[in-house]
Length: 477
Image 1 (spheres, rainbow, N blue to C red):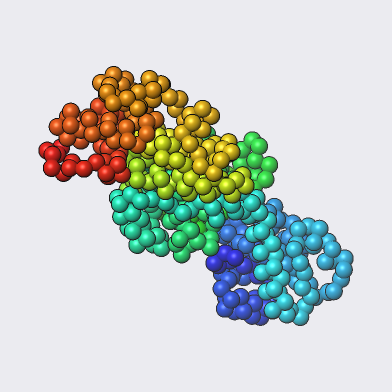
Image 2 (spheres, rainbow, N blue to C red):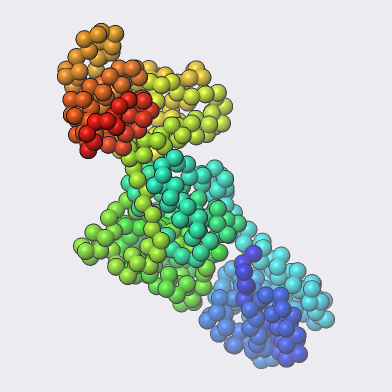
């Protein structure tokens, strides 16, 4: 349940008002009281009331039955419990038809009233969250383990572990597919908010109008097609985490509204006037250069410093080749379970091919390749031919290189696609190629990496994994 609900007591007896207010205040409710019809309408218009206790008999021309109908028009989600001094079935049936959730006969049993309110609030929450939870339940338990062997990322994770329980905003940057959403899930599901909701929204996927409605919700009739009230992602994420993906694509107008929510911890639904208070931890992500966008006037500077209280950059996969083997094994395990397969691993040539790839799609691309490989493989060990011939990976373009593998006079200078050659040759010949070009470039690693078409970090990884000796005795770049 929500941390603190607002309750409106509507009864013209001051003693009942006082007694119920004291009882519900002690149980964590924020209680308002009145004995007047018009005053009750005003309170519901101005305050975010979750439940109302309505006495059927009120002084004046209008009674509690009239009030039940009017409150439902103002606040469709409000829980209404009717109090009556008459155990009339007709009165109870009429109030329930008009929208009341339950009724209590005087004299009031406070505990019975509390139970009725709590039960109906929980039922309302379950109704509102059912679709959301159905879509999120699998991702909650399957995709928040951030896997890395990269020392820089491990250092960042240690920092994250120190701040993840703090109510601060986090900005995650990095290329598409590096794992920004996975990291955001790691922050949420290992923090003190893990039992609350993790809500995501892609700011680039929606028009300005739809994004406003998705973020803040809307009132019935606020625009064409708004046939009923809708809760926004901020409201759904109360107590938990809201992940704003691709925040760099958010319009300046919505940026200003987002800034206000961050500063005030409250907002108004589209078409509404009532302030709704929320406790949400915000995590934003982007693959764009927000600092450059600020200089170009495309991103608000004040918003940037609000969302980047703590920031972390995820390097591309090509700069952390040590992560490729552990990610491959993780994805093999995942898709074995999904497809009921029994793939154990890749062979060395397949590993070398994947490690040498430039990975423009990063971890997402790697996962896609392993997904297809596991799905299509008929053996326990996936080999390079399965990756290539199954069109899962880049086709081999250097057939002559493979034909030359057993020749002693290996013609290094005739290799046109060095990166592809390294990916598709055996480990011994890969070692020969690397050693040849290192010696050719006087062991200048940066120059060698450029000539081979791989990153300096990948070259360092291969030197270690292939155990290329005596390199430390040569001049280093």
